[in-house]
Length: 81
View 1 (cartoon, rainbow, N blue to C red):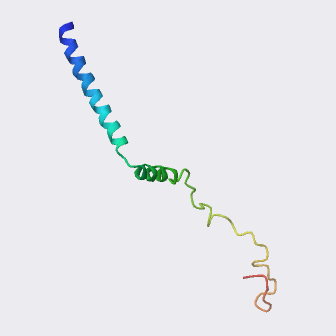
View 2 (spheres, rainbow, N blue to C red; view 1 turned 90 degrees about the horizontal axis):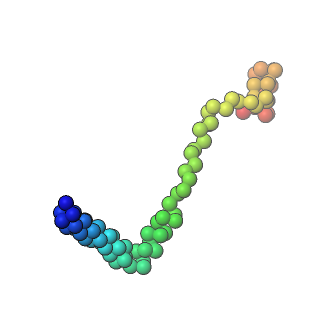
View 3 (tube, rainbow, N blue to C red; view 1 turned 135 degrees about the vertical axis):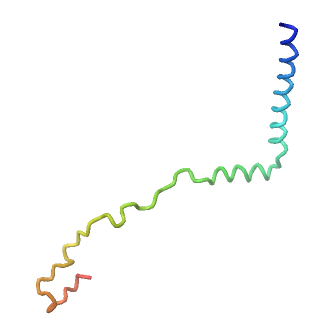
């Protein structure tokens, strides 16, 4: 069993080193301008999104002047819309 385990571990280690080397090579092959652009994109990404006002149209009209004209059509209230 020990004779079969050594080649399997060696192949797995070589495969793991190859993958790690590939990712290192990809990150090292970027130019400083590309790295700066990536850093700027990460820094300018919105962290918190603020929702729009969800209370519009749900607040009752509390203007006491509106509809407070006791004279009907004979007198126009200058404060009413």
